[in-house]
Amino acid sequence: MRVGFPQVVGAVDGCHLAILAPNENPEDYVNRKGFYSIILQGLVDSNYLFRDMYVGWPGKVHDSRVFKNSPLYDACCARTFLPMGLSKVIANVVVPPVILGDSAYGLTNWLMRPFTDRGNLSNEEVAFNSAHSKTRVVVENAFGRLKGQFRPLGKRLDQSVENATITVTACCVLHNYCEVMKEEFDEGWLEEVQLHLNIQPCDREEKQDRE
Image (cartoon, rainbow, N blue to C red; front, side, top):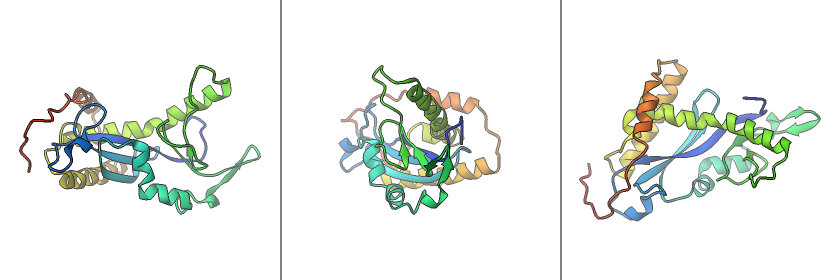
């Protein structure tokens, strides 16, 4: 739990990882920022550990669609993950375990998203959104730390989609190991990651070598 937000198991979000244009259906991999990518969906806890990962969907696909097609979604719906037996009574209200997601995700009794801000939020709703944001930021931080530790992920993976998916999954596992073992993390690595975020839109006509 962070900043007073109870019963949070983790935060879910999607991260785009740049790849070479695939041979098959390359247009499906062009994301909204204009480069070819695959999506890493991560569920991250307060220690920056990936508790669930789902990798490989084309960059054009919306985060909510990736989520609804993931095993994590099915497990949450069935309550085999986030079981009701872990509920707690807080201020006379039964609060089940939940995960947090941004506005891209649908609201359920096990996924909390922020209130939509149209300029008319109450003080309580503003406070909720603030706590939600400060708690959910762990997933964004984890993506940054992942790319900082394994810097090729912050650039472009010159691999096939299949091999890139394997590489990303392996890096997530190694990231968890580094976090558990308290391996030294240089904050300067995050600055290097930021330098590579402004990837130029890809040339649809360009022929690129593949591994």
